[in-house]
Length: 184
Image (tube, rainbow, N blue to C red; front, side, top):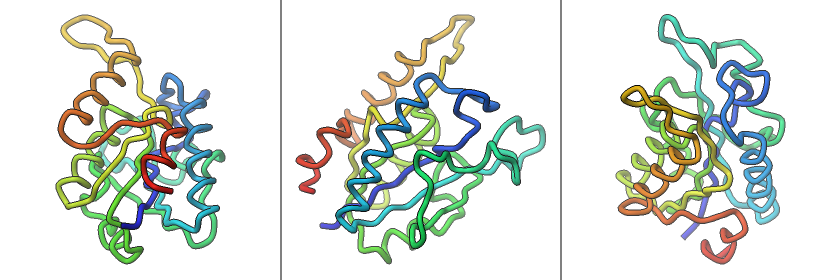
């Protein structure tokens, strides 16, 4: 079984100074960079996914802006595909599935942003398409949300979504646990 690293939406708008800053984005990117280094050193496939917002009134990830660019911590190198998406699900109306199949990947280590939206949608879709996944909890980030007039802190949002994924879709591990868990 070949494992690929899928990095979802590690884009500038989610970092300090961006249009939708997330809680812990810098720490998550540093951990994602460690995972990326390991995959590169082992010659394993890496796929970067980036979001461009095309809907009217979008406030971030606007095409052609610096905020929509992939963050410097995980800049793609020659030969690493970058898949551009327009929906939370990384597979919807993209060639991501074909790229992963061409790379021979059957398993995915997944990291990215936002835990409660695009990471969650991407992992669920990947599993539904037959991939075995592991979510890198410390290489992912989200933000505070509001529900029923209350603020739900990012740490609780992150934990709730990871707990839901772990219950039925994918083990949740740290970057430090990744090599032994994935047999790398």
